[in-house]
Length: 393
Image 1 (cartoon, rainbow, N blue to C red):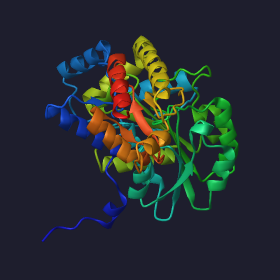
Image 2 (tube, one colour; image 1 turned 180 degrees about the horizontal axis):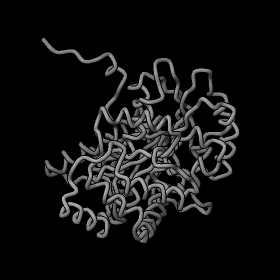
Image 3 (tube, rainbow, N blue to C red; image 1 turned 30 degrees about the vertical axis):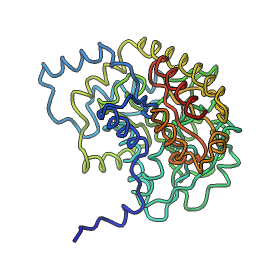
């Protein structure tokens, strides 16, 4: 006799990126010399001034529960960050601190969506978006984009996807997995559509905001479209740009009624994020930002290398991104040349013959692509490209 699980679990898949990270770890522990290009995790260490703030907090005994929505000092630092970087003014009750940006996104889905509600998700998308929607009993509505249009949704596509059941739109820029980033003008064009639908809540996932190198400066949706401020929940965090993935601090700013509902949900799931991590996050947001500049130089150099190298592999077509730390090559030609059925089989071949771990495009809503993380050294990337090339001979 086996115990049953909920009907909901039939709609939800495990995270593909977490699965590949686990596989790489497992293979390394077994003694295999594998190169993992699957993890979306900076290879840099957390900057010293951030670690020092956390150590000092421990010494001072700041190890107790905090308010569910975050300490007043961290929320004040987030307010300053939003005003400084995005020209957005949020009151304290409009800010929620969570255990990572992922929890902020999940909280928003649970706060807004219900049975029959639709959430529009442009593809390629971060693998967790559709399953978050399904857990909240909503229905993902996918808008497909491709390498030929820069992986960006158009106002016409957005308008066509909206129905009377649409309650949410996900917008991730710079994008995981493609590295594409919307310009201010492109966001304003989407805003002209959204302002006609005031019941739609937009989740602006800006987690890669500072890992951005396009000529056009980064622009957040609420900044580009002030008329949408009452519809946009801006989500961010410290994991990517400050190399703080394990600290688990994300945050959201948005309409007070939505943030209040998100806080209520969080109060019944995790309560407050780590008190020590909150002190560290405040130090990150208020402290010396030169650490971001140094990391950004490395990411841009890696992007330049890996995009050019991938385009030299037969059957690969790769677009240069504007940010994040991923390349997202189209590999239909390589799949066909190897006599394979799909991108999953190509990933398996490259693991078996090249000892390189990557994530297929299908879990991102983009069959025929691969996601390659370049959050590793140039030396590792060079070795990986060599192995990929040899495996396809």
